[in-house]
Image (cartoon, rainbow, N blue to C red; front, side):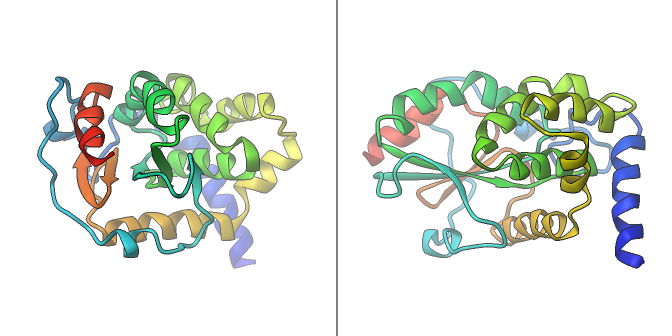
Amino acid sequence: MTETTTRRRFLATVAALPALSLLGACSDGGDGEARADEAIITGSTAPEPAGTVDMEKLLQPGALPEKALGPEDAPVTIVEYASMTCSHCASFHAHTFPALKEKYIDTGKVHFIMREFPFDPRAEAGFMLARCAEDKYFPMVDVLFKQQNNWAPVQDARAALFNIAKLAGFSQESFEACLTNQKLLDDVRAVRARGAEFGVEATPTFFIDGKKYSGAMSIEQMSAIIDPLL
């Protein structure tokens, strides 16, 4: 009974969460505004890393199977922590990621891993749907970022998400089953909690061969980091 109540409360929260400035929800700041250091980075020089982590520990299996693109033995590994309602994450995936994929991932130079770091129930729901889409994880993430303005800030996000999910083949039943999957919700939250252990506080955060970078970098900036590692 308690578990069922928790699921219903989560669905209700997704639907009724006020349409505040969720699209700025890229940090733990209580006002929902992104910090200045998360603004989109431009230019062609590599930013200074904000720290380093042990890549062996970072790449250890977590609560959910990794969602990755590119060969595992690529010379460079990038781990991105993102939130589905973060405007900077959406900007990165719209403007930088296609070039990153074409230039480095598809050519076997980069192994790219995406991990969930949701800041609110709507972001959690978006990631849950992407996970339930199975082999369509990255296409689902791409659509949710592209249509972020159509579901993240609206009054009834649940209905808006269902309209998007239908395009990926979800029925009303599979949509409801996904968003009431308590284990999946717990696992998504576990991925975020583990990210926090590595110092993730804002999104997007990238770990490139162990060095930490925060902010939606341009392809020129990412190239300046990646090229010397090849």
